[in-house]
Amino acid sequence: MRGLAVHRPVHLDPRSPFVLDTHELGRRPGSTRTVQLTERAPEDLGTDVIGIPTGTDVELDLRLEAVMEGVLVSGSVRGQAVGECVRCLGEVVENVDVQLTELYVYPERAAVAVEDGDDEEDVRELEGDLVDLEPALRDAVVPALPFQPLCRPDCPGLCSECGARLADDPDHSHETLDPRWAALGSLASQVDETKES
Image (cartoon, rainbow, N blue to C red; front, side):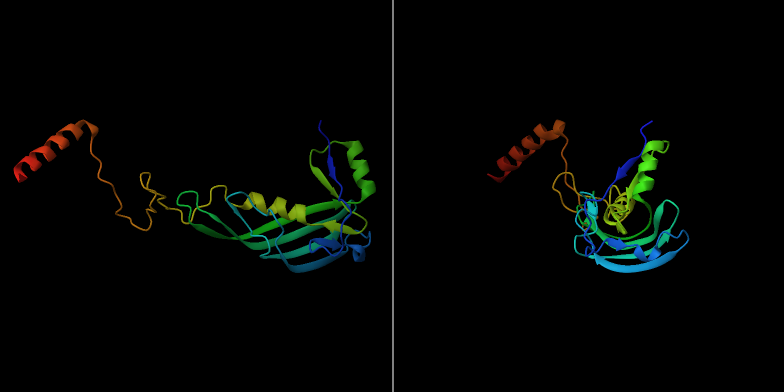
């Protein structure tokens, strides 16, 4: 069995917008606190084709609850993702509203969990009384984004010959001549030239 992978924070900055202090919960299971934040989106909150742009608003409505193992953070994350339609390359704007649930374990509990190793889930560890929400935020938002974003479900895409957006001109077409008739077409133009002279 693979066992647990413990994610230990690299010295957290308590002034960082996505670092929360859980000190007032103490280590009393059942004690709770609600947190409502509107913060600027961190970098890389999305995929190559769609994501919440860096610096735009992300709303967090969270509940922090002390449990035996650590602190359970749950709630919702809202924002607006911007991307590119995979068919016509036009802009796609999607409202994001996802649930976040993450358990941050006390360091001594993380050590026990690694020794037991029955579970195959990753574990995030508290640094003192601080939790880093940014990785959990990314884990909640990125999988909820569309894998192939579309500006509209019936987007016709681009013309395969000239690249024109088909949504802008629904009657767009190109006259195609069957290559088998090409020689006949050149004969017809020669006949026309002979008639003109």
